[in-house]
Length: 320
Image (cartoon, rainbow, N blue to C red; front, side, top):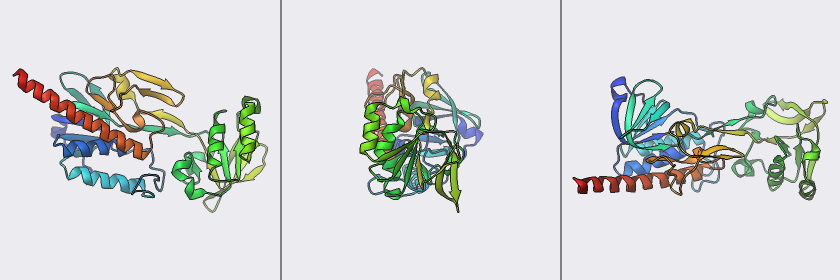
């Protein structure tokens, strides 16, 4: 599917049954279901998927190992077959009224009876030189996403807080050679249970601040400490700070829930927010949503919207 940019005429006061904000797994899945249900649907995609740095995605049955860009390209082709429109743009505002009015960054606006927010989140990297540049290659964050591919290699785990103990313990499932770098976390912040579990898992604990990475021939070979010591490692797991892209939902007055991993909307099992007519799916509703979860969430939201619009239209006919 060719991603197009709307003309000013197209963008001004066009009315859709549903506007889907975000063209990742959640948004495309929702659009597919809506298109198949014969609803006029527009996907507005800024083109900034969270998993863009990854060469492959894992754990999605029948799509295991597929590059994320290929997965999204196939999704765009599928929704086009059902008449769904997709534009490369960014939604800057959604206003409530009889319809929702959706303002686009490149100008103009469209109207929608229902909204799906699938804007995801951004990963903010720890401020250690080299980490952001190698993220998705040999600097990783999710063992379920990448653990098999790097199994049995020497792992490092960079602590961003005492909660990093959990990550160190989890990745030890994929390698018996794991070093936990405390970085700016004091050893006293670890509980006795933490230390005993780390010892039981065979995880080495290294205090002191991490100064940077050692990279040779475009491969991670070590972690350099502030005192100059280098620990040979070929993989480093980090815990990025998740930054949910939920500004549109907050602007609509959606009820939000603050968690240790960011603030997300309160939703029902279908993804319906506290704002009537507005659903959310994917990483817009939680930090831990993987691609397979996001696709499922988009499907659930769309099927709920199809039912909602059907009953609304039938009731309007009865009232008339």
